[in-house]
Image 1 (cartoon, one colour):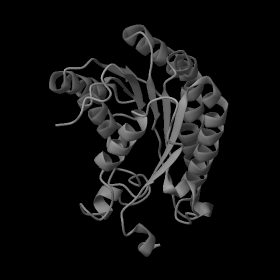
Image 2 (tube, one colour):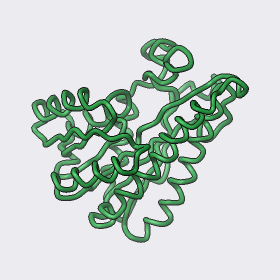
Image 3 (cartoon, rainbow, N blue to C red):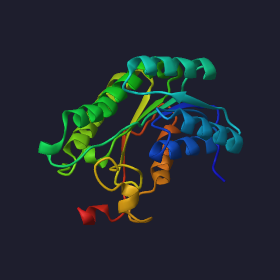
Image 4 (cartoon, one colour):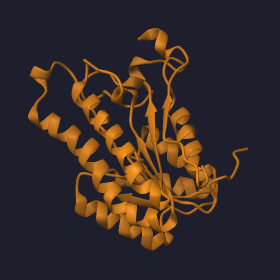
Length: 247
């Protein structure tokens, strides 16, 4: 049985309709947190929120939110705070990728990745920070091991995650003095739909056991989120045990 170590916490998870975001919502709910799931796929979110409420006996809220649209982000965060009475945990997870030779990456692809992975992280952080300051809560960024090492196959995605790392650690220095815990989670290759827009997805490329399962990452995020003041976990990498032997 999962320990109810997040009971009473109010959480927002972006990019929650699939992959790591969805599994994180399920993990948080199982641990007793009230969860707002946000993404652009409102129909999927409503089904997920209903399932979480029925299975975990918590309050779940489906919020349509395009993180690249600062007006939508502001409206969505306001609706969550009105419903929950505040925010204790924010998981900045929404992200997309593109790949291939740089000569073949279109301007549209480049701007799409940067809009979600960079602008989206900024908009969500800016809008939720006042509420996390009020609760002395936790802000978690889902980065990537691609934010620490060169990635010739998808340099734009990698660059966006290098930005995420710099932003997250800098925000930690800024908000930590005011009691906000900031953690950067860097997953290795994970069996999600990542890559489907420019190659076979990770789910198609890797069999179970050959790459991380989204639940593995979700459990790590929950571990970081449950830390109590005055301590926090600054940065965690989650990888397969043989990952370094395959580099």
